[in-house]
Image 1 (tube, rainbow, N blue to C red):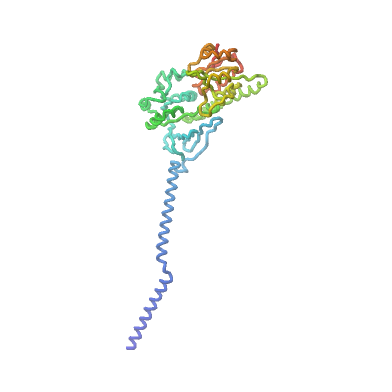
Image 2 (cartoon, rainbow, N blue to C red):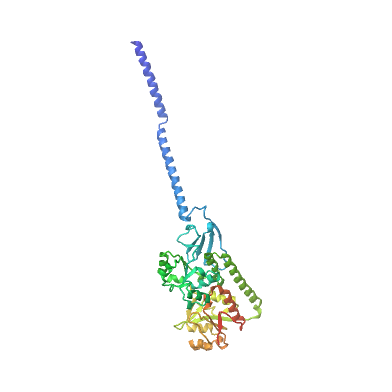
Amino acid sequence: MKKKKSKMNKYLFFINIIIMVLCLIACGNPDASTNQVETSKDKETSQSEDESQDMKTEQSEDESTGTKSDQIQYDHSMDLVYANQFSVDYYTEGYIHIHIEDGNEYVIVPDGKEKRNLGLQDVTYISQNSDSIYLAASSVMDLFRQMQGLDKVKACSTTSDDYSMQEIKDRINDGLITYVGKYSGPDYEALLGMECNLAIESTMIYRTPEIKEQLEKLGIPVFVDRSSYEGEPLGRLEWIKLYSVLLGKEEEAEAFFEEKRRAVEELEEKLAEAKEDREEKTVVFFYITSNGYVNVRKPGDYLSKMIKMAGGGYALENLDFDENALSTMNINWEDFYREAKDADILIYNGTIDGGIKSIDDLISKNELFNDFKAVKEKNVWSTNLNMYQETSKITDIIQDLYYVINEDGVETEYMNKLK
Protein backbone atom coordinates (compact mmCIF):
# COMPACT_ATOMS: atom_id res chain seq x y z
CA MET A 1 0.00 0.00 0.00
CA LYS A 2 2.87 2.35 0.83
CA LYS A 3 4.58 1.61 -2.54
CA LYS A 4 1.42 2.42 -4.52
CA LYS A 5 0.96 5.63 -2.62
CA SER A 6 4.59 6.61 -3.25
CA LYS A 7 4.19 6.07 -7.03
CA MET A 8 1.03 8.13 -7.04
CA ASN A 9 2.81 11.00 -5.36
CA LYS A 10 5.58 10.93 -7.97
CA TYR A 11 3.04 11.15 -10.80
CA LEU A 12 1.30 14.09 -9.17
CA PHE A 13 4.65 15.81 -8.65
CA PHE A 14 5.60 15.53 -12.34
CA ILE A 15 2.14 16.70 -13.41
CA ASN A 16 2.44 19.77 -11.16
CA ILE A 17 5.89 20.51 -12.56
CA ILE A 18 4.56 20.41 -16.12
CA ILE A 19 1.62 22.64 -15.20
CA MET A 20 3.94 25.15 -13.53
CA VAL A 21 6.26 25.25 -16.58
CA LEU A 22 3.34 25.86 -18.90
CA CYS A 23 2.08 28.63 -16.65
CA LEU A 24 5.49 30.23 -16.52
CA ILE A 25 5.73 30.16 -20.32
CA ALA A 26 2.32 31.70 -20.61
CA CYS A 27 3.10 34.35 -18.02
CA GLY A 28 6.45 35.13 -19.61
CA ASN A 29 4.83 36.19 -23.01
CA PRO A 30 1.21 37.01 -22.31
CA ASP A 31 0.76 39.27 -25.41
CA ALA A 32 2.38 36.99 -27.93
CA SER A 33 -0.79 35.99 -29.71
CA THR A 34 -2.15 39.54 -29.51
CA ASN A 35 1.06 40.99 -30.95
CA GLN A 36 0.91 38.53 -33.79
CA VAL A 37 -2.64 39.56 -34.57
CA GLU A 38 -1.86 43.31 -34.32
CA THR A 39 1.30 42.96 -36.44
CA SER A 40 -0.71 41.22 -39.08
CA LYS A 41 -3.30 44.02 -38.97
CA ASP A 42 -0.58 46.69 -39.16
CA LYS A 43 0.88 45.03 -42.25
CA GLU A 44 -2.53 44.89 -43.88
CA THR A 45 -3.20 48.56 -42.98
CA SER A 46 0.22 49.67 -44.27
CA GLN A 47 -0.22 47.71 -47.47
CA SER A 48 -3.68 49.18 -47.93
CA GLU A 49 -2.34 52.73 -47.42
CA ASP A 50 0.48 52.14 -49.90
CA GLU A 51 -1.92 50.78 -52.46
CA SER A 52 -4.24 53.75 -51.89
CA GLN A 53 -1.34 56.18 -52.32
CA ASP A 54 -0.29 54.42 -55.52
CA MET A 55 -3.84 54.71 -56.82
CA LYS A 56 -3.90 58.44 -56.00
CA THR A 57 -0.56 58.94 -57.75
CA GLU A 58 -1.71 57.08 -60.83
CA GLN A 59 -5.02 58.95 -60.79
CA SER A 60 -3.20 62.25 -60.39
CA GLU A 61 -0.98 61.43 -63.35
CA ASP A 62 -3.97 60.43 -65.44
CA GLU A 63 -5.95 63.55 -64.50
CA SER A 64 -3.09 65.99 -64.91
CA THR A 65 -1.42 64.70 -68.05
CA GLY A 66 -3.87 62.38 -69.72
CA THR A 67 -1.04 59.87 -70.07
CA LYS A 68 2.00 58.53 -68.26
CA SER A 69 4.52 61.23 -67.48
CA ASP A 70 7.39 59.36 -69.11
CA GLN A 71 5.61 59.15 -72.46
CA ILE A 72 4.91 62.81 -73.33
CA GLN A 73 7.27 65.52 -72.15
CA TYR A 74 7.85 69.19 -72.85
CA ASP A 75 10.49 69.73 -75.51
CA HIS A 76 10.79 73.42 -76.41
CA SER A 77 8.86 76.65 -77.07
CA MET A 78 8.42 78.76 -80.18
CA ASP A 79 10.68 81.81 -80.29
CA LEU A 80 8.66 85.03 -80.38
CA VAL A 81 10.05 88.54 -80.81
CA TYR A 82 7.09 90.93 -80.55
CA ALA A 83 3.88 88.95 -79.99
CA ASN A 84 2.71 88.64 -76.38
CA GLN A 85 -0.86 87.39 -76.83
CA PHE A 86 0.06 83.75 -77.48
CA SER A 87 2.72 81.13 -76.88
CA VAL A 88 3.42 77.76 -78.46
CA ASP A 89 5.00 74.81 -76.63
CA TYR A 90 6.15 71.66 -78.37
CA TYR A 91 5.95 68.24 -76.67
CA THR A 92 7.29 64.84 -77.56
CA GLU A 93 5.29 62.58 -79.87
CA GLY A 94 4.19 65.63 -81.89
CA TYR A 95 1.77 67.24 -79.40
CA ILE A 96 1.64 71.06 -79.43
CA HIS A 97 0.17 73.37 -76.79
CA ILE A 98 -1.10 76.82 -77.81
CA HIS A 99 -1.80 79.25 -74.99
CA ILE A 100 -3.80 82.44 -75.61
CA GLU A 101 -3.59 85.32 -73.15
CA ASP A 102 -7.35 85.41 -72.63
CA GLY A 103 -7.00 82.03 -70.91
CA ASN A 104 -7.91 79.70 -73.78
CA GLU A 105 -5.81 76.56 -74.06
CA TYR A 106 -5.51 74.45 -77.21
CA VAL A 107 -3.75 71.16 -77.87
CA ILE A 108 -2.84 70.15 -81.41
CA VAL A 109 -3.28 66.39 -81.63
CA PRO A 110 -0.96 64.63 -84.11
CA ASP A 111 -2.45 62.30 -86.72
CA GLY A 112 -3.09 58.84 -85.33
CA LYS A 113 -2.61 59.92 -81.71
CA GLU A 114 -5.06 60.06 -78.83
CA LYS A 115 -6.17 63.28 -77.17
CA ARG A 116 -3.88 64.30 -74.28
CA ASN A 117 -4.48 67.36 -72.14
CA LEU A 118 -0.78 67.84 -71.25
CA GLY A 119 -1.67 68.76 -67.68
CA LEU A 120 -4.01 71.56 -68.71
CA GLN A 121 -7.57 72.34 -67.72
CA ASP A 122 -10.47 73.13 -70.10
CA VAL A 123 -8.56 72.17 -73.21
CA THR A 124 -9.85 72.56 -76.77
CA TYR A 125 -8.44 69.84 -79.01
CA ILE A 126 -7.55 70.60 -82.63
CA SER A 127 -6.58 67.90 -85.08
CA GLN A 128 -3.27 68.37 -86.85
CA ASN A 129 -5.11 67.30 -89.97
CA SER A 130 -7.75 70.06 -89.87
CA ASP A 131 -8.50 70.30 -93.58
CA SER A 132 -12.01 71.77 -93.60
CA ILE A 133 -11.69 75.11 -91.85
CA TYR A 134 -14.42 77.69 -91.34
CA LEU A 135 -12.52 81.00 -91.27
CA ALA A 136 -14.70 83.72 -89.75
CA ALA A 137 -11.77 85.99 -88.81
CA SER A 138 -11.28 87.83 -92.11
CA SER A 139 -7.87 89.26 -91.19
CA VAL A 140 -6.49 85.72 -90.84
CA MET A 141 -7.34 84.80 -94.43
CA ASP A 142 -4.32 86.66 -95.78
CA LEU A 143 -1.97 84.78 -93.45
CA PHE A 144 -3.26 81.47 -94.83
CA ARG A 145 -2.86 82.87 -98.33
CA GLN A 146 0.72 83.87 -97.60
CA MET A 147 1.54 80.29 -96.55
CA GLN A 148 -0.30 78.66 -99.46
CA GLY A 149 -2.80 77.22 -97.01
CA LEU A 150 -6.08 78.30 -98.62
CA ASP A 151 -6.82 74.74 -99.78
CA LYS A 152 -7.68 73.93 -96.16
CA VAL A 153 -10.17 76.82 -95.88
CA LYS A 154 -13.62 75.63 -96.98
CA ALA A 155 -15.93 78.29 -95.51
CA CYS A 156 -15.91 81.97 -94.57
CA SER A 157 -18.19 84.67 -93.13
CA THR A 158 -17.25 87.46 -95.55
CA THR A 159 -18.67 87.77 -99.05
CA SER A 160 -16.47 87.92 -102.12
CA ASP A 161 -17.54 91.54 -102.69
CA ASP A 162 -16.19 92.50 -99.27
CA TYR A 163 -12.74 91.03 -99.93
CA SER A 164 -10.17 93.16 -101.68
CA MET A 165 -7.76 90.31 -102.50
CA GLN A 166 -8.53 88.91 -105.94
CA GLU A 167 -7.36 85.41 -105.11
CA ILE A 168 -9.86 85.20 -102.25
CA LYS A 169 -12.63 86.64 -104.42
CA ASP A 170 -11.96 84.02 -107.08
CA ARG A 171 -11.97 81.11 -104.63
CA ILE A 172 -15.32 82.21 -103.19
CA ASN A 173 -16.85 82.82 -106.62
CA ASP A 174 -15.54 79.46 -107.88
CA GLY A 175 -17.05 77.61 -104.91
CA LEU A 176 -13.72 76.56 -103.41
CA ILE A 177 -14.60 78.61 -100.32
CA THR A 178 -18.27 78.79 -99.32
CA TYR A 179 -19.81 81.86 -97.77
CA VAL A 180 -21.95 80.45 -94.95
CA GLY A 181 -23.37 83.68 -93.58
CA LYS A 182 -22.16 86.19 -91.03
CA TYR A 183 -20.22 85.08 -87.98
CA SER A 184 -23.28 85.85 -85.85
CA GLY A 185 -25.48 83.40 -87.76
CA PRO A 186 -23.59 80.76 -89.76
CA ASP A 187 -25.31 78.00 -91.72
CA TYR A 188 -24.70 75.03 -89.44
CA GLU A 189 -26.02 72.51 -91.94
CA ALA A 190 -23.58 73.74 -94.56
CA LEU A 191 -20.70 73.45 -92.10
CA LEU A 192 -21.70 69.91 -91.16
CA GLY A 193 -22.14 69.04 -94.82
CA MET A 194 -18.54 69.98 -95.56
CA GLU A 195 -17.38 68.09 -92.43
CA CYS A 196 -15.94 71.25 -90.90
CA ASN A 197 -13.33 70.32 -88.31
CA LEU A 198 -12.16 73.75 -87.12
CA ALA A 199 -13.67 77.22 -86.79
CA ILE A 200 -11.39 80.26 -86.50
CA GLU A 201 -13.26 83.24 -85.09
CA SER A 202 -12.32 86.81 -84.19
CA THR A 203 -13.05 88.13 -80.71
CA MET A 204 -16.36 89.39 -82.14
CA ILE A 205 -17.68 85.88 -81.41
CA TYR A 206 -17.80 86.81 -77.72
CA ARG A 207 -20.68 89.14 -78.57
CA THR A 208 -22.70 86.08 -79.58
CA PRO A 209 -21.44 83.34 -77.24
CA GLU A 210 -24.36 81.08 -78.19
CA ILE A 211 -22.83 80.70 -81.67
CA LYS A 212 -19.56 79.45 -80.24
CA GLU A 213 -21.40 77.08 -77.93
CA GLN A 214 -23.47 75.68 -80.80
CA LEU A 215 -20.41 75.08 -82.97
CA GLU A 216 -18.78 73.20 -80.12
CA LYS A 217 -21.93 71.14 -79.52
CA LEU A 218 -21.75 70.10 -83.17
CA GLY A 219 -18.23 68.83 -82.59
CA ILE A 220 -16.47 71.76 -84.27
CA PRO A 221 -13.60 73.12 -82.14
CA VAL A 222 -13.46 76.92 -82.03
CA PHE A 223 -10.19 78.86 -82.04
CA VAL A 224 -10.49 82.57 -81.21
CA ASP A 225 -7.95 84.87 -82.86
CA ARG A 226 -6.59 87.58 -80.58
CA SER A 227 -4.05 89.21 -82.88
CA SER A 228 -5.94 92.53 -82.72
CA TYR A 229 -4.87 92.83 -79.08
CA GLU A 230 -1.18 92.96 -79.97
CA GLY A 231 0.23 96.38 -79.15
CA GLU A 232 3.15 96.14 -81.57
CA PRO A 233 2.55 96.12 -85.34
CA LEU A 234 5.05 93.33 -85.86
CA GLY A 235 3.37 91.47 -83.01
CA ARG A 236 0.28 91.19 -85.19
CA LEU A 237 2.34 89.95 -88.10
CA GLU A 238 4.01 87.38 -85.86
CA TRP A 239 0.70 85.53 -85.58
CA ILE A 240 1.62 83.97 -88.91
CA LYS A 241 3.87 81.72 -86.83
CA LEU A 242 0.89 80.49 -84.82
CA TYR A 243 -1.15 79.58 -87.89
CA SER A 244 1.87 77.92 -89.44
CA VAL A 245 1.51 75.32 -86.68
CA LEU A 246 -1.90 74.31 -88.09
CA LEU A 247 -0.40 74.00 -91.56
CA GLY A 248 2.90 72.40 -90.58
CA LYS A 249 4.80 75.29 -92.15
CA GLU A 250 6.75 76.73 -89.24
CA GLU A 251 9.99 77.13 -91.18
CA GLU A 252 8.30 79.03 -94.01
CA ALA A 253 6.53 81.35 -91.56
CA GLU A 254 9.74 82.00 -89.63
CA ALA A 255 11.61 82.90 -92.82
CA PHE A 256 8.79 85.21 -93.96
CA PHE A 257 8.61 87.01 -90.61
CA GLU A 258 12.37 87.50 -90.41
CA GLU A 259 12.40 88.99 -93.90
CA LYS A 260 9.73 91.53 -92.94
CA ARG A 261 11.40 92.30 -89.64
CA ARG A 262 14.70 93.07 -91.37
CA ALA A 263 12.87 95.40 -93.78
CA VAL A 264 11.54 97.43 -90.84
CA GLU A 265 14.96 97.53 -89.19
CA GLU A 266 16.49 98.84 -92.42
CA LEU A 267 13.85 101.57 -92.57
CA GLU A 268 14.53 102.55 -88.97
CA GLU A 269 18.26 102.73 -89.73
CA LYS A 270 17.52 104.94 -92.73
CA LEU A 271 15.44 107.28 -90.57
CA ALA A 272 18.12 107.40 -87.89
CA GLU A 273 20.77 108.44 -90.43
CA ALA A 274 18.58 111.27 -91.76
CA LYS A 275 17.27 112.40 -88.38
CA GLU A 276 19.22 115.67 -88.25
CA ASP A 277 18.29 116.64 -91.81
CA ARG A 278 14.54 116.20 -91.66
CA GLU A 279 11.66 117.80 -89.78
CA GLU A 280 9.17 115.45 -88.18
CA LYS A 281 5.70 115.80 -89.64
CA THR A 282 2.57 115.19 -87.60
CA VAL A 283 -0.16 112.84 -88.79
CA VAL A 284 -3.82 112.27 -87.91
CA PHE A 285 -5.63 109.02 -88.79
CA PHE A 286 -9.44 109.28 -88.59
CA TYR A 287 -12.89 109.01 -90.15
CA ILE A 288 -16.27 110.70 -89.61
CA THR A 289 -18.96 108.50 -88.07
CA SER A 290 -22.56 108.41 -89.26
CA ASN A 291 -23.67 110.42 -86.21
CA GLY A 292 -21.11 113.16 -86.73
CA TYR A 293 -18.39 112.17 -84.28
CA VAL A 294 -14.76 111.79 -85.29
CA ASN A 295 -13.29 108.31 -84.83
CA VAL A 296 -9.54 108.45 -84.17
CA ARG A 297 -6.77 106.03 -83.23
CA LYS A 298 -5.76 106.16 -79.60
CA PRO A 299 -2.24 107.30 -78.79
CA GLY A 300 -0.06 104.21 -78.42
CA ASP A 301 -2.22 101.89 -80.52
CA TYR A 302 -0.55 99.78 -83.20
CA LEU A 303 -1.39 102.15 -86.09
CA SER A 304 -0.12 105.24 -84.30
CA LYS A 305 3.05 103.23 -83.62
CA MET A 306 3.31 102.46 -87.35
CA ILE A 307 3.21 106.21 -88.03
CA LYS A 308 6.13 106.69 -85.63
CA MET A 309 8.02 103.76 -87.14
CA ALA A 310 7.62 105.50 -90.51
CA GLY A 311 9.21 108.67 -89.14
CA GLY A 312 6.11 110.70 -88.29
CA GLY A 313 4.61 112.09 -85.13
CA TYR A 314 1.08 111.30 -84.01
CA ALA A 315 -0.76 114.63 -83.74
CA LEU A 316 -3.21 113.33 -81.12
CA GLU A 317 -0.50 112.15 -78.74
CA ASN A 318 -1.81 114.30 -75.88
CA LEU A 319 -5.43 113.27 -76.27
CA ASP A 320 -7.13 112.01 -73.11
CA PHE A 321 -8.69 108.57 -73.52
CA ASP A 322 -10.23 105.75 -71.53
CA GLU A 323 -8.10 102.68 -70.86
CA ASN A 324 -9.83 99.72 -72.50
CA ALA A 325 -9.22 97.10 -75.16
CA LEU A 326 -10.42 99.30 -78.03
CA SER A 327 -7.77 100.86 -80.27
CA THR A 328 -10.07 103.66 -81.45
CA MET A 329 -12.34 106.20 -79.82
CA ASN A 330 -14.99 108.74 -80.83
CA ILE A 331 -14.34 112.38 -79.96
CA ASN A 332 -16.40 115.50 -80.52
CA TRP A 333 -15.62 118.08 -83.15
CA GLU A 334 -14.32 120.67 -80.70
CA ASP A 335 -11.61 118.34 -79.39
CA PHE A 336 -10.69 117.11 -82.87
CA TYR A 337 -10.47 120.66 -84.24
CA ARG A 338 -8.22 121.73 -81.38
CA GLU A 339 -5.83 118.76 -81.65
CA ALA A 340 -5.76 118.16 -85.43
CA LYS A 341 -6.14 121.58 -87.03
CA ASP A 342 -2.37 122.14 -87.31
CA ALA A 343 -1.40 118.58 -88.25
CA ASP A 344 0.80 118.30 -91.36
CA ILE A 345 -0.98 115.26 -92.81
CA LEU A 346 -4.55 113.96 -92.63
CA ILE A 347 -5.20 110.29 -93.43
CA TYR A 348 -8.84 109.34 -93.78
CA ASN A 349 -9.71 105.75 -92.89
CA GLY A 350 -11.54 104.68 -96.03
CA THR A 351 -12.15 101.10 -94.97
CA ILE A 352 -15.20 101.93 -92.85
CA ASP A 353 -17.57 104.08 -94.90
CA GLY A 354 -16.16 103.55 -98.39
CA GLY A 355 -13.73 106.43 -98.04
CA ILE A 356 -13.61 109.74 -99.81
CA LYS A 357 -12.48 110.52 -103.35
CA SER A 358 -11.43 114.15 -103.03
CA ILE A 359 -10.70 116.97 -100.61
CA ASP A 360 -14.09 118.41 -101.48
CA ASP A 361 -15.67 115.16 -100.23
CA LEU A 362 -13.91 115.70 -96.92
CA ILE A 363 -15.04 119.33 -96.66
CA SER A 364 -18.62 118.26 -97.41
CA LYS A 365 -18.57 116.31 -94.15
CA ASN A 366 -17.75 119.50 -92.24
CA GLU A 367 -16.80 122.93 -93.58
CA LEU A 368 -14.43 123.44 -90.66
CA PHE A 369 -11.93 121.28 -92.55
CA ASN A 370 -11.21 124.43 -94.59
CA ASP A 371 -9.27 125.70 -91.56
CA PHE A 372 -6.98 122.67 -91.37
CA LYS A 373 -3.33 123.08 -92.37
CA ALA A 374 -3.25 119.75 -94.24
CA VAL A 375 -6.30 120.76 -96.31
CA LYS A 376 -4.81 124.13 -97.19
CA GLU A 377 -1.56 122.46 -98.26
CA LYS A 378 -3.42 119.63 -100.02
CA ASN A 379 -1.76 116.94 -97.93
CA VAL A 380 -4.83 114.75 -97.43
CA TRP A 381 -4.84 110.99 -98.02
CA SER A 382 -7.35 108.12 -97.88
CA THR A 383 -6.69 104.44 -97.26
CA ASN A 384 -8.16 101.66 -99.37
CA LEU A 385 -9.95 98.52 -98.26
CA ASN A 386 -7.07 96.05 -98.46
CA MET A 387 -5.00 97.92 -95.89
CA TYR A 388 -6.68 95.97 -93.09
CA GLN A 389 -7.34 92.71 -94.90
CA GLU A 390 -3.76 92.16 -96.06
CA THR A 391 -2.41 91.37 -92.61
CA SER A 392 0.84 89.99 -93.98
CA LYS A 393 1.65 93.37 -95.55
CA ILE A 394 2.07 95.38 -92.35
CA THR A 395 5.66 96.23 -93.21
CA ASP A 396 4.58 97.35 -96.70
CA ILE A 397 2.02 99.67 -95.10
CA ILE A 398 4.75 101.12 -92.87
CA GLN A 399 6.80 101.69 -96.02
CA ASP A 400 3.83 103.49 -97.61
CA LEU A 401 3.52 105.68 -94.51
CA TYR A 402 7.19 106.49 -94.83
CA TYR A 403 6.64 107.75 -98.37
CA VAL A 404 3.54 109.75 -97.35
CA ILE A 405 5.45 111.43 -94.52
CA ASN A 406 8.93 111.80 -95.97
CA GLU A 407 8.95 111.38 -99.74
CA ASP A 408 5.77 112.80 -101.23
CA GLY A 409 5.46 111.93 -104.89
CA VAL A 410 6.32 108.25 -104.61
CA GLU A 411 3.49 105.94 -105.69
CA THR A 412 1.90 104.10 -102.76
CA GLU A 413 -0.17 100.92 -102.70
CA TYR A 414 -2.40 101.33 -99.66
CA MET A 415 -3.02 105.08 -99.58
CA ASN A 416 -4.30 107.51 -102.17
CA LYS A 417 -3.52 111.22 -102.19
CA LEU A 418 -6.62 113.33 -102.65
CA LYS A 419 -6.98 116.34 -104.88
